[in-house]
Image (cartoon, rainbow, N blue to C red; front, side):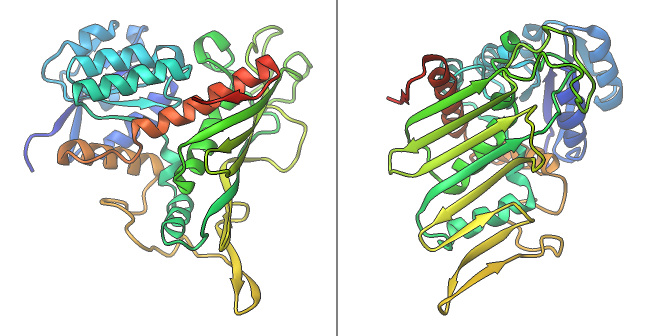
Length: 362
């Protein structure tokens, strides 16, 4: 093939080292990482040494990175508050952008990103890698084939019992824009909207709780935090009605007194059948007057749902699919307009919880 894409990484912390950099390393036939930026220079240097090409550049100011005319693609891996303005600046500088989820701290900032992508003609996608899981791809195909019929009820679930992330700025509401709703609830909602292919919300009702943040000892999987450190909610719930009348219930928590916890899954109920991820993939319906449950073996290979699917990790598939979209000038797997809808709904739930009233979308 021709020249490889040249990638710059903005933010060399946990999500970059845990997801983006290892995934991009599996795509060395398509791209090379040439520039690393982090407010802590040592972090950028460490990432460059491990994942960069020989002579990879390092900086602490993202504007220096995006000013490099040789860079084709930028990955934004910073705290949520800076997603929007860094992404907009990178798009304006002529770069294609992969931004880690959630799209932004609120819908207004997310809209700026969508508008910038349209204005510049550059590609923008958001890191919802859970779409690339085998179970998600299988259920999506069943939805596209019409197995479920009209999907009119769904549940988006992201529930942890006691697993508050105590590193980075996860517990800082100012930097993150919220807690479990915007952190893991966003994945469950994205999966649900994508499978339903429904991005037209009408109104929502939300409740947000700060109940367990000051109860010590916490029993938290990653240890206790200090009193006052957890400024986000510990759980949040939403009831969403779409323009076509479909209903979605969204459940999210980092800390909740329950045993049956599940993260980033969807349950879908349609006129002809249903699907869930409660015990692997289960497709249910009526056949020959009898109820049935189908449980496909997702470990036995199957359809290549999109170019380069393979049997790799979701984040590896995400990276390869994204780079192929840039190279082949095709739509990315996650469209910015879809991610913007997720941000709109999350913001509506927070606003409803604040006012105690339903939030109506324009």
